Image (spheres, rainbow, N blue to C red):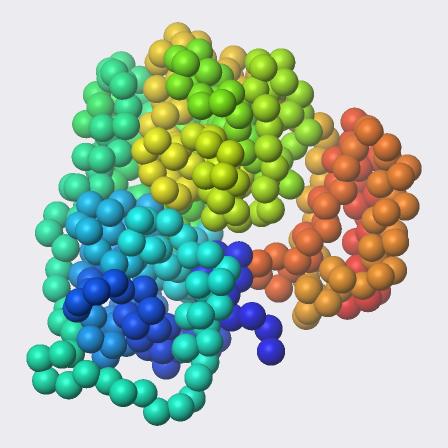
Length: 443
């Protein structure tokens, strides 16, 4: 039986793979295993998906069945739940969201009392509890948990995000695309509080339009808005606003690697980049390494997933890390990928440097990269096929130090991801095509 938890929580088609029954069991597991002494409190937040209400109710019921109280934050970004857990002093946090995935999907993510995502070992304990079928001894009477509301969840989180910026953003024109998701309630308010002029799209929602041709996975609407409005930068979130991609004043894309490079350079200039080190992932472009070496900054690489980035950051004492996809962690300010804090820090770098975003982004010269998502029924099995491993090894030997290859199973979708970087774009494409063809033959 495959592991229930993927790269970022439990995820699947809502009401098919991710059922209310499973959500109840996971809620009960959280209420039982994550609380400390006494009754305990668990903060629950969600994004704008239509299935959020159903799964929120099921998770809350499970937490209450374990004798733990629920604090409902409503529609908030994922990092807001991590913040609220710490701010309130709760025992754990639960986020009901499938992040950048289409509206039919949903997911359940967990934070511990310090606002960090759970270790693999703790996820395994939750999974074992939720999967067990034996009778449970549950509290009755006054021992049953209650459901309460978090007071001013949005205001508290926005105030925290604003407090992470030194100085103001007066006179800066910012374009926002909130992906019909949770950022619709937070990002515009935060930028305006710092004095920025804001134009925004996709800040409404109907429950089925989250991430639909919008946000960080579809930059065309934001690019159009930047160009038509004359904005100095554009910010695109995903559905739960734990990631950010950007568009410069000329319509060029600023991906997670470039955002990290810009923010690292700014922190380095301010003497605030602890250890002169930054954490990327195995997906971080080789051009990023070259740019950071030029600034005297060491690049460390973690497996894909912001919790693995965070783990390496904590072990090495780094304060900045993230992923090419736009998950960026500023450990001095937050405990997880935070799209709003990332956006504000990027805007601060533009204002503090006095340069255009396109100039700042030019610090990174990415190696040509080809990323192919191969849809297969069992990506884990295909990724572990000896013939595929042998082919990858042979292609890597051919590339030498002029490129690299990464083939891995997605932790959130039934996809095999084939990534090839090379100094020559055609070489990268040819290698990726050969590996993709082989992967499909093994599916």
